[in-house]
Length: 466
Ligand code: ADP
Ligand code: ADP
Ligand code: MG
Image (cartoon, protein in one colour):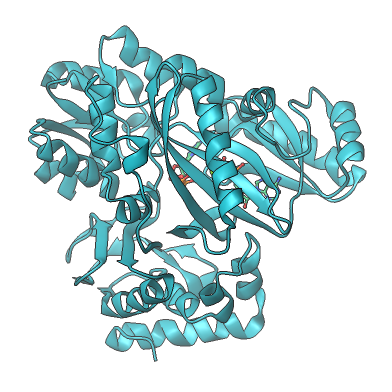
């Protein structure tokens, strides 16, 4: 591996450039017309313009990206997360062009990319799955499955992701209606109308296991992340270790993740996602065959640079650690700072950032691509920064999180900082007793929305919540 093209933008493109630089690997950035002023473009050794702002014409344009790698002499591509990171077609195109894809081989993406197919593989390897069906060929079959497992059920798109492609049905009538709409939407959004049915597990916690495969069935795990604070099935806060998971459950989940990854000959970084119910029974929901947004919390507690590990594995080199060296030290929490207005139902808030003062100090990491004068463009993901704090205990990490959140001064656009300020002071959050519906429950309480609005205006005034 001699030169790495990063087929992504924003904070994750910078994150990857940093890891490459520490390995003395030259980097190539790609950018759309909307990203000409972006930091990843300035920071990479080379940069190639790849087209119009709309992602389909740039960051999702496979032919253009392969051509950019050829033009710039890159022999490897890191896809980051989102965009083409889980695209079978992209992996195949890299393989056909003789370019190293930093991630698993096409065969693994083919096996795990279809969420219904992944369920079947999990079941075949004694990994418990959510009660449901592997694939719902038609409405009748799905009604049968729902009768078996009991309502409410979820209708899920096999190709879904990013919290999209999931709808709830509480009765046969709702299921009939949801089924038709979901198939149409899945076809439009993901190019694949395949659906499957899952029982709704609630209350549930989302706990996932980070794995690192070397191929040939050799898999390491870097323990778990708790990601239960979600809105619209999108994570907003993640932490490691998971608070309140008993050691036997934790070990059993890690073993299940290892088993599944080994079964498919996993290569590179991947995440096995589970739901955990009130009785600490756990159920596989899906595997993400890529670097996760929240990988940083695992890095902070293990001291392992996951992007460096991805690059070493892709280059066919030895890892610098073995399973026995991997230990979880202290507690790390990530707060996703999105350009969205929590006081206006999380409406996107693109625009020019006039003031951008970021937190710092001991145990504080900010992964971002913003700066004062930067304009958040409306074409892509709303994530503008990740605040990751580490401390020896969870209690101290929460306090550090609160301290760091207060240091943020972002003026010109609305962000989710005020929401996080509220969350770090929330009693249930502090006790670690949360589930995937908790944040929405909190937001739906009338006074919560009013409180947030008040906080937002106070934050805008002096950069600190009262
Ligand atoms: P993570 O699983 O790493 O927490 P998210 O679910 O937040 O990541 O997704 C990261 C990014 O990737 C988001 O921009 C999300 O919209 C996008 N994404 C993930 N999966 C898909 C998919 N199958 N199709 C389209 N976008 C996706
Ligand atoms: P995506 O591919 O969009 O990430 P997932 O299948 O990972 O979709 O689910 C995303 C989120 O949706 C989960 O973290 C959880 O909050 C919720 N969810 C998914 N499946 C279930 C289920 N069977 N019961 C309850 N909640 C679920
Ligand atoms: Mg998921």
